[in-house]
Figure 1 (tube, rainbow, N blue to C red):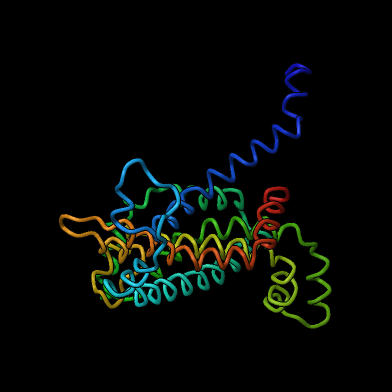
Figure 2: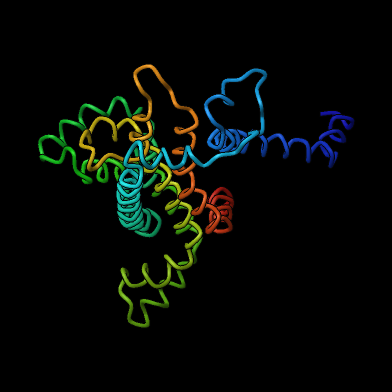
Length: 280
């Protein structure tokens, strides 16, 4: 790269322009959904397009909760995603600790298999998962989604935690065990607190994956009592109508829990992703 090109890319104005483009690309869809959710049907289809609503209304949010049992879908998604995240972190913490600390044979092969297992398209796993859940009699239950989500989240959670566990000095665990801690106690009292950014990062990734998943939720749980939010939002569509403002309002409701999680744990998640990328 020539000096002229290097000087161009090092320009603060160019860096700010690139950052603004990334931010715009990330936030514009959510902003457009938000604006759509406070428009009425007539304003939505008029031409030329109006970017800002002329008469903002919250009627669409009221209809989103009255046309479908949105609160029930929200509760089901919270239960499924929350339980799947907790179990994913529990299992992946033990797996990652064993890989990072124990003298396992073929350790690199194990890591390769973990990475390979995450590369199968979900659609290829749908039939085996469905048949397994039916054999156990778990269709139309929370367990039908929680257990597959745990399995699907384990590779990424394990890989994130392995990189953090490896960055923690062994001397700290040895000192804890000399003071009377078991290996399990050292994991709980020393390793996990020090690897908190990685735990939060893995937890957010697991929660978002479970919260957004649609294919398994549609195939395994047909009962309205356990229907999750992604599937429930599709039911607003009628045979001849597609109420975009109401659907947009429901989508905003679905985005809110994720936005709250990111806002609360932003520093830990960003730090976890950065440190994991450097130390992994």
